[in-house]
Length: 293
Image 1 (cartoon, rainbow, N blue to C red):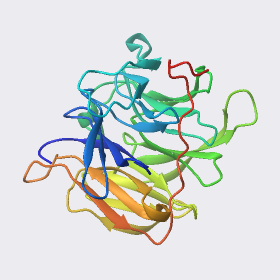
Image 2 (cartoon, one colour):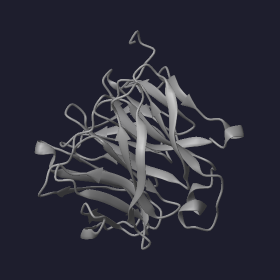
Image 3 (cartoon, rainbow, N blue to C red):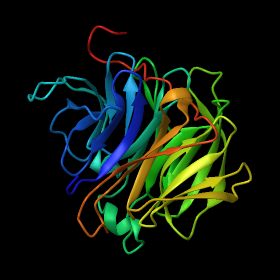
Image 4 (cartoon, one colour):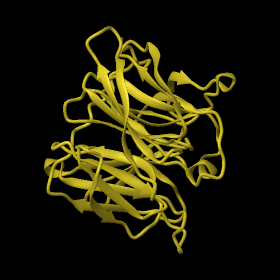
């Protein structure tokens, strides 16, 4: 598609592949037969999304918000803001996010706006933080000092959270305690350093393998539990932003890209059949403003 910066892919049995176009706006779907819909119109700057149990999605950008799917409608849908920006606290926006098995939402905040400069290392700003939004809407900070928060995903046990830091070109691993009233970080460690690329989106398979999109490099790398790169998937467009598992048996890896660096100025969607299934991502169960909780 001409232009575009595709982000936040998720797979849904009803709609097929669901993704956002941060540049042109909106959340879109693409079924296997090629049928597409605009599920959430207009909104630009979405850095990530997770599906919600109430037939909609939690999306990011200027805030973290629930919006219902409204296919066929062009007017904006009602918005339930879950976490807002606060420039005075160096919280100017939000990027990627994920959920745990209970449906809590984990999201990374951004300390500055210059995304493109930050990715290539030519600019810096205040670091961001890692936040969790609980089932009742309560918000708490789990970690800070994240140069540029990006993709997030849980391991198969649901107790270790991976988070890409594009600014430092590494992947953090958080061991979480989920037994209390709110999740707590037991330990944060560096899972992998990826100096040859910019870690962006991330996905995890059922065997514990971690797959990381390297923006501007046109590839996805597969990492074993030690953090060592053991596999590489080459993509014909350089700006690989993210991916997700889906399809029959969760064995198709859907990959989205941006137009940056493509001679035709086009973003793309690709699919790769895998030998291993992906870890399913639970729907968010946070408040919606529609009579839930």
